[in-house]
Length: 335
View 1 (tube, rainbow, N blue to C red):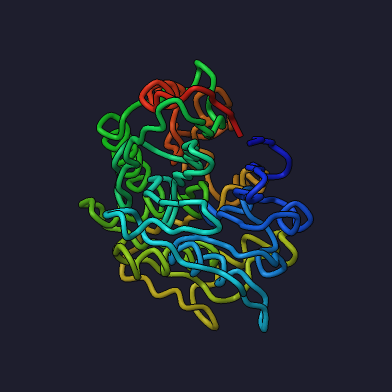
View 2 (view 1 turned 30 degrees about the vertical axis):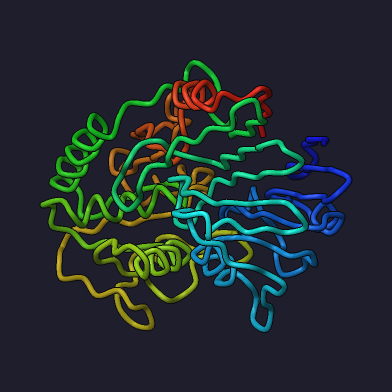
């Protein structure tokens, strides 16, 4: 069996060709079977144009479907449930597949694949720490098999502090910053970290309104249908046109009219997707520099010019090493 990284991870045997998390239509359509670990766009794109059978979790299906254009839909798919007993393992052309939570974002899965008397473990992006809104990923074994894992933070600089350490610091920053500002801005991944921040704020004692970018609102809404996050709102008029920000000042000043923003608090926390990292200077034109915060694992090594915390939905260097050792794999591939 061959394991090839080429716009997705390819598992190729005489019996079947599997692609996990294909990033192009051509790469996906060359395969017999597609496994989708989660709904981030760097792991799956144009899912509605992919022809082979696609296996994913129900939440991942919901999240991917919510991003499709009108009249587009996902076809030829199979929902797989998290493994709890042998009946949850599916068999396709002699290939046995089991799914396990990955702890990365809503619906994220690890896959254990048994093919040609070999066990392949694909972690996807994963997190081994419990956090608000998500359970941690279980550790799995693939003794003498193949371990395929995330290398996003596979560098010694990226050993992250625990949530037990981070949460009090983040909440203290929220408290102090809200005392001095009417509105504060949080920039983080729309799917994964922003749901964690939504739950963290809602279960804290802070009194503020939580206002989300429409894309985060959509992810929060789907997440809350499985695991409640608490209260959050959004403003319905568009923030962007083809990913270009319109006038930020007029957007955030319009607290009435055709938006859905209704605040019972004078203080507001505004959640924005991570790509707003490119617009920090523009945000600073309206907000004070000390009212903007970035939450990402890259904060360990990058200076964003504003307050930042290394809050990540990915495993850090030490977690990746520990998992690799625990798996007892014969070979390891990074993606």
